[in-house]
Amino acid sequence: MASEAEQMTAERRLGYIGARFASPPDAAEELLSLLKEAETWLRRVDQLPTESMRKALHPTMSALAPKELLDHRDPDVRLTVTSCLVEITRITAPDPPYDDDVMQHIFTRVVEAFEKLDDVESPFYATRVMILENVAAVRMCVLMLDVDCDDLIRDMFHHFFRTVSNTHQQNVVTSMEAVMTFVINESDDVQQDMPSYLLQDLTSYLLKNVKMEKKETLPASFRLAEKVIGMCHEKLRPVFISLLRGTPIDEYSKVVTSLFEDAMDVDAPGEDTVSQTTKRMSLLNV
Image (cartoon, rainbow, N blue to C red):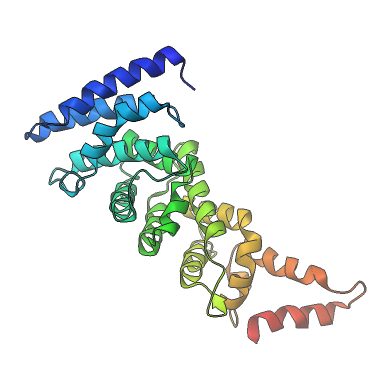
């Protein structure tokens, strides 16, 4: 948490930046410079801002929301606008700063940023990581569920599994794990007496990435999926049982087979091995 003096400095700077947004520059390079300045000072603002800070933020918040900026033709401008809006969402959390339509548009750009998390040489890589860390830190991904961004959530999981790498720093992987875990644990359990379509799809993504392969080194996506399954095992167990009926579970990581073994723990003491095996197979073959 920043000191009171630091917050006052940020408040003054953001008031000045907000005034400049009243007539933003047309040139992409100049606009990007202004956006980076806004991003720098927004990062210094604590959550639960004072009333005076809220007033200082208001012009910038209003200037960044229009569709024209989020859809700017310059990808660097779009990404930096997204970063600023994510910072604003962090500051106002748990309350969203904009209406549902704007939040959906913001989340579209957030997921677009995640698409290139494997480009560690990009000058904007740190910006993408900061967006990811903020989404994880204040559970913005749960807000994605609230504003019906199911397809974006599917894309986000796909991007995480595709881009995660053994060369990523731990904070990147940990943030991915946190986002995926929050989404799974907060998603609806059932839909028409079956696991929700979203939860089924996300579970299928996890299963795809924990299928055993004969490789000397397991891919980072395998370990990511294992970790998420381990943290969401209670939520995922009934979905796994539903999806894996008739499938040899020895094709998958031990973290999957352990879910079925845990399901057998309710067996009465003394139940023989044959009956336990029969019960386990019935889960998969009914």
